[in-house]
Image 1 (cartoon, helix red, strand yellow):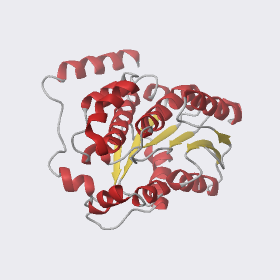
Image 2 (cartoon, one colour):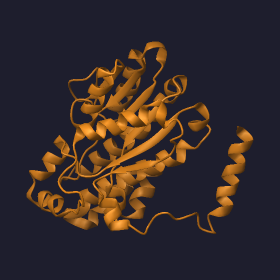
Image 3 (cartoon, helix red, strand yellow):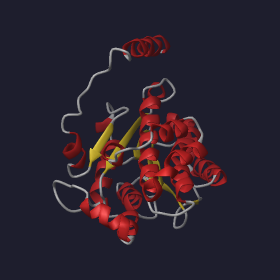
Length: 284
């Protein structure tokens, strides 16, 4: 049996994942604003430091066998919402994983970051917002979406999930992560009936957009089913899964992008790709 950390463990997909891990006999360190082993506000740098240190202090021998990064904020309107979305959805993942890397390496851990199918189904997401997040410039990322008015929070949400997915894919194949025995992957759900979605459905403008969004199989997904996918991605069956983004969204991504995959690397990208491969091979 192992030790796992789950952020957003008090509700939704995080809660379901934590309950399934405990039912399987594992030790779970939950991180949330309430009802968790580590109480921390991931929207602030101090809160993220509290979460990072608190988890390592509890983990036996400073070792983690896996992590589920499920804490997140949805695209609701509000003057301060843009900053909160970026802080929780992006930095609340990246900073924690960087702090936990030694503990995850000690456990040869598997990590599941909860992303979103908004990464591929939300149009007009400013590239500058994504680049700014990856460069550690959240204020610049906020300025990139503000001109879009009522749509700004939806674009900020998508930008945060694109940025975190790209961060995972970049880091997953590096010596510090794959080379250390850690498997980093992203699970990209669609519309799942969680407190976050319920909050959106309670806002008239957001509810209209959510209900009009195409889900070929119909209805909303179930948080428990997503938790089952998370457990699979934490299992030995996922030993060869690395840097993947797995869509579980009722067919929405395929609806919009049936012919957008697969695509190989462009000719311009090949020199960089070959250089990276050679560098990785040398360090191995």
